[in-house]
Image 1 (cartoon, helix red, strand yellow):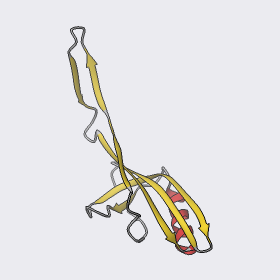
Image 2 (image 1 turned 60 degrees about the horizontal axis):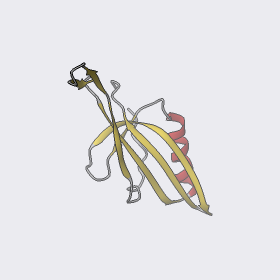
Image 3 (image 1 turned 30 degrees about the vertical axis):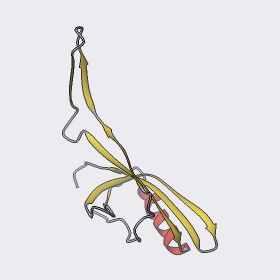
Length: 116
């Protein structure tokens, strides 16, 4: 499996977004509710990241790498704080041209549970 390109740590302020949780819920007439996880991997973590002050080559090559895989191909990404390696899919990616040779790359990743 491919690994996310080796960039510096993302900007501080990156967020671990609220995870998607899949739960089956059945409501009974007496007010009782039965809840259970919908599948083995019922919690899907998400992250929003950005890298600023990137040079043109790094920013554009990483943007194209993510764009080519967007919502289709999973890859391995190392969490910058915990060091845990996650199999993720890129759900969104954007590139901002701030100035000559000063680029901002933004992306959101979502945990992927498909077999390798």
